[in-house]
Image (cartoon, rainbow, N blue to C red; front, side):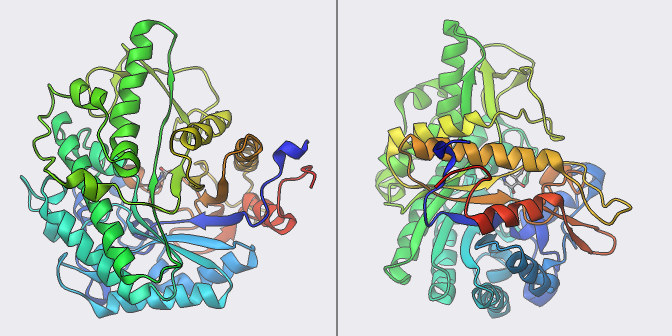
Length: 456
Ligand code: IFM
């Protein structure tokens, strides 16, 4: 290995999870349903009709889970706050919900784990989504989100040093409103665009609300699943399709948040789907707030062409193209170098510090007769992606941390419990946690402060 695989001093080694995927306890201490409770309880929406009712029972088992994190040397935990626990109807504060997160965060600090809180990882209070024109299709939700950000900032700002407004608004808008694979399960391409705009607006209002109540030292940012879009060929048609996907999946969030405008090719390329009249005077100024870093979730590149069998979410002008690559059990192609390209592009375009807030792979992991859970493919995957991060750093990109997705196996949205992303195996019958080989390997990487073979 070469010095190119060094990661910077002070690099944060973390793990990430999200509320609905792990907490369970969906009716406890005043929590009311989110759109994901409704969706998962609708037959046929989630594989096996699985729900998050119990999930990893993290609501009760968090001390054990944090002990395990500490024992593995995980330095930072990116968790998410369930809006329907803190404001069950989206409007009224529930102190018991805030108390839970206070206990959780204090538990992290007692164990030397740095908290990073995501405000919105898709569990919108159901009471804010009453159908047509509500939920992320309306503007009211953006003010409700600002109120929620104020409440959380006031309650936890003294103990949480970093907040993310949203996780992957592209999934919330396009899988929630165009393809219907995610809650609330609406299926109409044109709906994804007002949803995306209102998510952008909620981000801007959320940053303003947080900054108004947080200490000046607190970091505020957002996490995007920026797609590393690759044209299927260098034909003009495929290049145009790739540029179109970069607009509808990436720049639709990056540009308003980080530049204060929607890209012209996004507006012209989607005119047949939406009229954009929901963008009002002053919205772009509100959305364009300084952030302290950009959170980037990366799993795989996306190959895109002008024709194919599967249209890209939210458009009829570009298609997903299957290229021969090794794949995870999600069917996602594996190409670590895509992460280097993506980090380089974001650095070149926006020049702000980057943190990989999610990366990892799904498997069908089991606990073997020897009591271990052996996942050599995940070790290989994470190792390759950490090297890809180090390659970006060697090229001058400011990458400050890496959070493996996920710490525990958990509820993988429309896939239920079938796909396991954890570095810790969870037996969902007994709730027994078993660190996989990848967890011990990650512990050694963290203890070493870098990758095996990398020279200081
Ligand atoms: O499980 C999800 C997570 O909630 C958001 N990012 C992608 C992960 C894997 O699909």
